Amino acid sequence: RIEEGKEVAEILVNMRKQPADILPVLMQLDISNLRSGEYTLKVEVRDRNKGLLSQRSVEFLRSNPFLDAKEILLEEVNLKQEFVAELTNEQLRYSLLAMTPILPQNDVEVVNLMLKEENFDAQRMYLFSFWAKQDPISPKTAYGDYINVAAAVDKTFRSGFRYGFETDRGYFFLKYGRPNDIVRVETEQSAPPYEIWSYYEFPKTGQRNVHFLFYNPSLAAEDFVILHSTAIGEFNNPNWERDLYRDAPNEIEGTDYFGDTGVQDNFNRRAKRILEDF
Image (cartoon, rainbow, N blue to C red; front, side, top):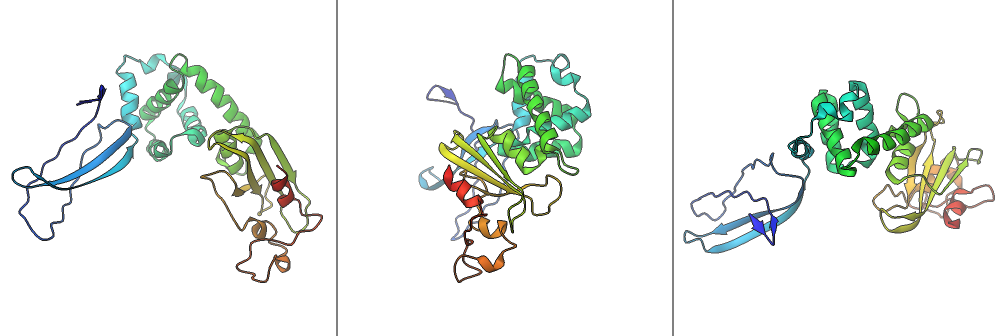
């Protein structure tokens, strides 16, 4: 239907029930053809004369990348003539894994399913549709620019058997871009190696002076994991000092070992000062 000059998707389902004090209703709706977007699920109770007795509604988000991709294809896009046709199955997998940090959250599970089932047609369709939305004029260029950065991130942060963009540092680098400042500390007493990344401006959340603290408790080569962040929506750990200086259990700041979160300051402990300096 048309509402305020815009096409609005609408699914109507009617059910008739005999009156009762408590009447549970369980049903399923097929939303496979519902485009990605914001929707309202509305339930109304009416009498036999269609008079409204009660109603409830709830907002929800629908992510349907398969349908979105098909809609692009309906515009006579021939994937066999696009850049995705040139990618091998392994390159497809690599590309989709590298894109994980920038995918809409609702799409991550869908992409993982495509990878698990090795549905290469769906992978090509999704990959093309994603970059066509980013740059309708030249999706190949947009894809190429990103994958070049992802390959560099992979090389820089690769650890063990994981791609570099699958590590915490690689993930956040691709998600938020290069930090303005990186401080790496490797020889601080009672702390494993750690890095503090600082972003002076953080448009994703509208914050300033955002920090990410990574540390390497396993001491394995470049195996840094996120310990704390001040970015809204990311992992915020009020116990980060205790976790970082775990080898100094007798220097907890306060009298409650289990409740206090700080660690006694000394000249060699830099992490808190670095975070507070920016």
